[in-house]
Length: 286
Image (cartoon, rainbow, N blue to C red; front, side, top):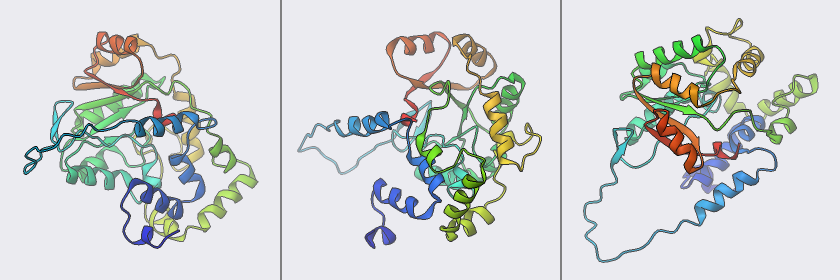
């Protein structure tokens, strides 16, 4: 790797290479990878590369204003930080770092249901209201409780994910042993972590606790990561339909965005169910 990437990263690709150097392999693959053969992930990248900006010349560009409104909030540019699960394992208290960065840049930050840092911690680090992303769980009481806590933390925009009815088959997670509980997999992960001493010091040791902060009161052993995963696997509701969106709309009094809409018919159904907006997404090909 060129020394340039260790000194002054300039592009998203530079930061990707830095992440590959800093993170244990199983965590890097979790962020970087897609489902199955990752053809959808590759198509996402290729499709963005096809978008060309129409150039116009001889315009007064002395004062350029990229600000806009997103979900009724003023943003410095038409961009928001999407929810990232387990961000607190990628950097020390990663969600709090991300909300500070978003606030400084003047764009919305979205906290994931399965983030490491809980709502109250992110709210304490934030200087502006942030968004909250929700996965529907079978325990509707848990859902109501999460929404009440999100509203109490100052969240006024809810991003409900609809493009993950079942987890994707992420082969990288299988190959690197992330999902396995065997001795071989545990030793493999331990070796991957041992190769990243800066991550061990900065995140593994100084970034505790590492449970899913917003769900800590729902799992019998909040310090057991496998117990968290088992609870989540049991709670993810695969039966969600538009009726559930109407129910969600009835209890959430803020702005409601549906993340994962891919066709016109579903866009119309989203509006009919009471959504205020949509996010066009295929979950990053995951």
